[in-house]
Image (cartoon, rainbow, N blue to C red; front, top):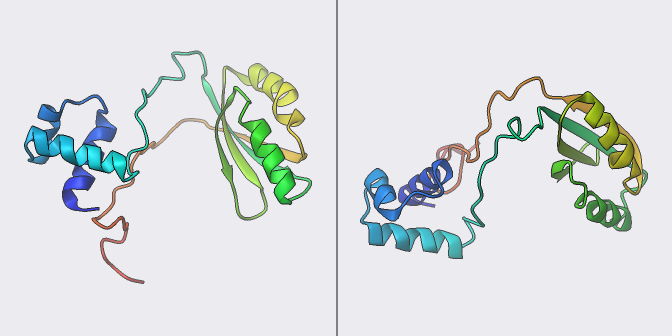
Length: 162
């Protein structure tokens, strides 16, 4: 990833609907070169899609909940069974397989504490192989960077070796 590619990704994250003319002005390429670079980033898998960023509060989801999940087994069968089931939970926005003491961390959006109680009872506690759920409620979002600030080459160390 070179400086131009990083700049283009940064601008597309800020505004995925920006025209090539607008992008070219911001990163210093012609619109044609900008379009070519964007297409190359898509073909190379750096850009996997485009989406609208929604305001969950305006949609009625005023609470974000982090749920740590421990399964009764870490067998491949148990993991697959859980992952297939959690994918169909409407309240779960994200799911991460973890290292350490918890098997998964889920990010869920709910309307309020009563809604979370309903989600807990009807969705999360019914997921297969769940042994334990630990929930934490976000008080407020402090930072939400859709793109890490990185140096060319994808390193956060700016070329420094440890």
